[in-house]
Image (cartoon, rainbow, N blue to C red; front, side, top):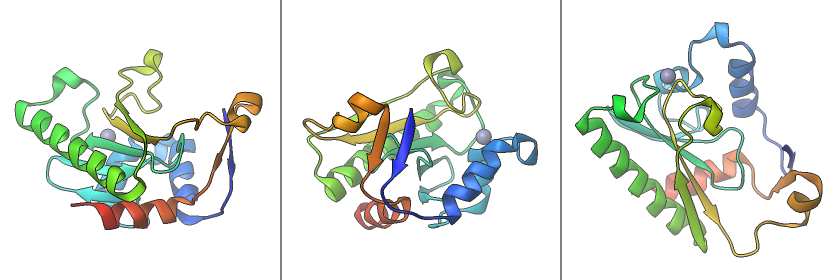
Length: 165
Ligand SMILES: [Zn+2]
């Protein structure tokens, strides 16, 4: 699926794309972002010792967040009980932030475990949280396999960070 960007922003996308194109430059794009901390540049809206929430650099729609453990772990069953509990707590806060920031009709929350299941970065477990609206499978998606994103990642960052509690 291709994406049409309705607004343009450079730094974060360029950096994230660069990391993905040159995996030898860093073992894991998530670990690399986490090591740089929460900021507009990294797209990390929330970070604690065990978990973080980061904007998806390749969003399926506006407000597409990823919730992940800070430790590099591919397997859901590889998480400790504490990491598991914290991951779920951060997922709840991500959902709350999306509800507050976007007032969506619904939210997709879930994980693709393994490459065969569609995980883009299978080596580092992550949950997707994506706000949805009635009828948001629009013309462009149906016809062209292309999504139009009405807001930039920068705008998403500010909205979600403001709504985070
Ligand atoms: Zn990692």
